[in-house]
Amino acid sequence: MTRDWSALPSVNSLWEATADPARDFPVLSGDQQADVVIIGAGYTGLSAAHHIARSGLAPVVLEANRPGWGASGRNGGVITAKFRLSFREIDAVHGRAMAKRMYEIAHESTDMVEELVSEFGIASANLTRTGQVKAAHNETTLRAAIDEANWMTREMGSAEVHILDKDGVREETGSDIFVGGVLNPGSGGIHPLNYLRGLASGVAGRGVPIFQESPVIKLRREKDGIVAETPRGAVRAKQAIIATNSYSDLTGATAHLQRTLIPFRSAMVATEQLPRNLAGKLMPTGRTYTETKRMMRWFRMVDNRVIFGGRGAFGKEDSQAAFDALRKAMVGIFPDLADIPLEYKWSGLVAMTLDSVPHIGRLDDRTLVSLGYNGAGVAMSSLMGRYLAALVRGESPDVGLLDVSRMKAIPFYPLREPAVRMVAGWYQFLDAIGR
Image (cartoon, rainbow, N blue to C red):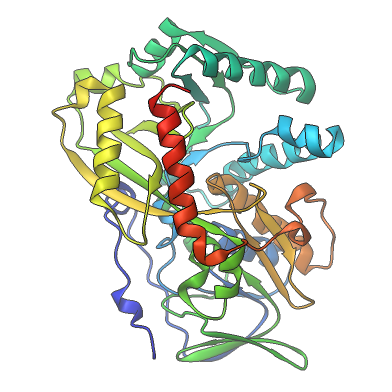
């Protein structure tokens, strides 16, 4: 049965409503030749296309929907130099040298976003590097955050962090519920869909073919290469890159990779534009913010609106219950928003892995992959494009713990959704009792 690709749902996001006009790309029809065929026109695929083309090779990009329809256009636009697995945990298990290499990769990723924005002149991406505040909801989590920050400064040579007391966090956020926090420099925010559309236009403008509404329904080997088949055409190439991340199950050609991922739905809401006096009171420094609860919420101010997001939205589609929970949590932090309507509600899939880090590398002599960004993908996926290009050229970049040989399938895969619900429910209980 042929899937109706035009029936894939649109995204009612703030980003979609405020983005630059989408560029129309052709649908693949007939046969194309390339050095590399890239499946997926998100940050990973477009960054890979850029770096591969700059190497003098010829890439072709195939996108099942339109560039930015997946996670690259749905995320919160937060830029952070981190992994879900902390550097301290990496140090304890894998040693100091590995922890330092992963630290280097993380910071290289945030610099890569800045490099690409500059390279293609994407002013509308509104990239900021003003830092991020981790706001603690009790003394126990504050002590843990301070201890972690001090360890990073002492052992990793991290830029000096700033410890904030209750008054300091109140000045930063406009909220009185936090007991203190830690300000980390270097993090930032971006308009994720404008960033994506700027990349797509820039890459296409340099001669890289991008085809939209061209899902790869079959990926097969030939004697001298690999063929990516779409409903109306095919691309013959020497190598293929799979850059589909948590949306790998859109077609059977990449669905096998879904067994290495736990898709976790992340929901977001955005308020109407706030009155000027209230907009000036909340998050006046323009940083991004997270809290220390296990079911972490994050928030930022964009265009005089509060954007509030977090994990815990279940199922395959948007959930009103998840949006209601976010609104309740938002008002709990910012009571002044109680009477401010929400204008946008949307969600997207975060690709979690068993070991809490992304993976990149060769699946075989002709196929490469990068996926599993664990909720920190804006920066990391942008960097992985550079590493994929190096692998295509036959180089062996040091990717630390990200090597695809470490990637493991999810055990008891059919039970993943109830297992996620159970763990999330336990975390919500611990948060509710202040643990």
